[in-house]
Each structure stands twice: as C-alpha cells, then as structure tokens.
Amino acid sequence: PQRTKPLGLVLLIDDSPVAAKVASKVLSLAKFDVVTANSAKMGFDILLNRKDEIDLIFLDVVMPNVDGVECLSWIKDNADLSNIPVYM
Image (cartoon, rainbow, N blue to C red; front, side, top):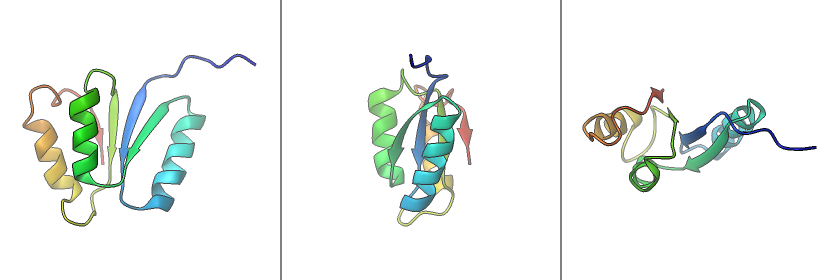
C-alpha cells in the first residue's frame, strides 16, 4: 500500500528511551514523522538545523542537566524557533 503524506514533523525531546519509543510509536500511528533527541541540548541543536522542517515539539519537563522548562526558554528566546508550538 501507498504511504500517505505525513501530517508534519514532530521533534520529540525526552531522556527516557522507553517514553520516547512509546510516544514516537503513537505519533507515527497518528501519521506524523518523528525525530527524537535524548537531551535538551541535542533537541535544541536539531531545532537550529531543521527549524524550517519541524512543525511541533514534544518536550519532556524532567531531564538531567537542562530540564524542559529551561529548554523551552531557549526556544522562545530564539526568533527563528519561537513560533513552533511546544507540548510539554
């Protein structure tokens, strides 16, 4: 069967491999393409490199080193990224 066009690209930022795998599967079943990052730093780097492709960010709140709240402030303080919706 022919694959339908994805609804968009979601960046999933979560340090838990199990949570990321489950969320990625659910989003894929909902017809989204998903790219994952296991830290705020990695997620922010992906955002900077793929800002024109990413439609939505799923951001874990509790992560080591840099938590989701701080990562959200990085995103919202960057004019090129601040318009991308974030779900925490």
